[in-house]
Length: 186
Image (cartoon, rainbow, N blue to C red; front, side):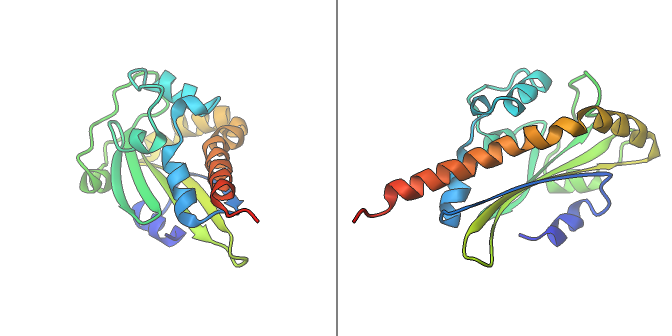
């Protein structure tokens, strides 16, 4: 999984957020840990999701969240996944459109809305360790959506670094703990 692949989905995002954490664990262990993080295991981001999507069970994994309405899985493979959603993410209305898959996401062009891409993957580092990466991109469909998106980002951008890093840090910690527990003792 590389950033260039994300450019195929949203090549000109107005907002891009990336969180990464490197760990001393097998890439499959990191991916498994990442896929198992639940909303109620995070202090802030889980609460924000439930505030925006109140019908969401608190014990839902982020993986399952990004595979159900209003999100849709766009593509996935070994140790990577892309999901997307569309709509007016800055309103208090919870009227996000249903997307039937990648084609609906690519074709979305309703004025005054955005397309949002969520990407997660594991990369190998030069030193042999592995990094879990989480990237979000938001692209306004037209100029009319840029102003409310900019206002939303102004309000949340200073907190985003703390909020978005929570699940990534938890997944790496779990993967490292599992690797240590599985390591043979001498």
